[in-house]
Image (cartoon, rainbow over all chains, first blue to last red):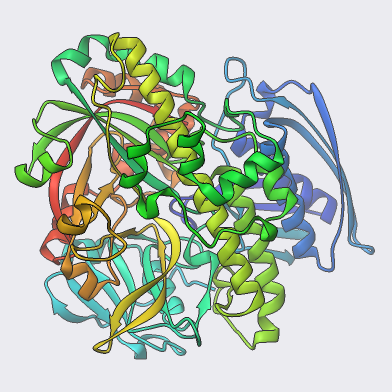
Length: 139
Length: 487
């Protein structure tokens, strides 16, 4: 389970590749890549908790909608994140996630870049030995 | 899907600054691609741009050429710096040709202060602006709105701000479309978009958005500059770059998903999902066009409220009213938008849906859309450069109307990815280095600052010279940075 930021995929945006042995691990990795783009999670207190429940027709849509939901919470609750815990049901294509974090506090948090949107550009979820996804975030 | 290893096209040279990509370059191209660039800029362009331009050239109803400005770099779907016009009956509208940040744009304001007057109080001024103009991830604005008021902003744009005390009536005359696009209809905006954007009026955001204190370092056309309120080369101006914030981003996301689901029913097939589109005249196409206008109006309002705050901060710092400081609008332009405009196509005037993504309207004199003094002189164009190098005030031309559906560039254009820039530059060090060179920067994110290093961008003077020599803009003033606020 890991992620890495890619320097040669998007010029003005942020691209990452996430991997996992299972879909749950893949979603976990992708979520960490996204929340790390917004702020260093180690500098964010787990003062607030939000629950995300989703269902989709395809794995691609489930991941896209999940990441988009995190971007939505960032704006509606002016929130950055310390931890995401997610469980994906591979059969039913449902997801349950708990997201912890705090309202934005520039004095104590190491902030990164705001994310405008999750894009469909080079967006892909692949079954390899485990799972692999590539995501480009509009910055 | 765009191809990062796309072959280099056999360019057909039209002039030293105009190069065509023939339709034979990629299967499906309906019209040629046309790039405005010097030979060097063309050679240095990232190759994905060629492929992305070819993909745009294959969209239904495209007119004449898929165009690319000299600041172009690859984007999602359409290239950034891209212009494409579509037939309103046969053609499409695509959120990917506008960008998620609908009506991301530039605003330029004058003062009657000089470099010498501002320099000793620069830190105090920038610190105050940094405190008063919210920037960075998750920032909230100071204007408290409910759903009803937010809907008024969606339909009234910058006019709402002026009516509610955030600006002067004369500001509106110096905004593209007077700061209000008429076809806005909140009925086609999701609740999700509203809740995401309601608290963000008057905020900069992050990425390449900024508020910059500048001086008019070089005046190229004294007569026009004077008409626009810039009279001397030590005069202080303020530039703002931001858009429609989470509100516009959500509208872009909502309609991307709607269009992806609906395309098959309209027998539309695109080469990259970020080119998702709908026929302009379809129900979904018209709904997006109305929702996009809501976001565009919110962006005009956003920059208007920020101007109000800038005026307050200058007034407080220099002990004079904004009127006494002559803090007048030069202009406000959108550079992520689609518009129904009349242009000459194959010798005849016709309506087309012009998509500008990282491209600015650059109308020459006489266009009916330009009112007051702008009708005679042409439309001001604001080109934002990197925080280290400077920006430009240009004027639209007849040549732009003839060649580019009245369009020009929007900035200098990136050459280095954000991830690479973070590896190559250190934000804290960059801030110190810039201060030594007389540019005082405040930021909410040092990694974000590193991503915006000047060396991550093309040389703006080369981009602007190309625009002028291709005849699609005219240089008026070169603006140099003094103080900057980054999100």
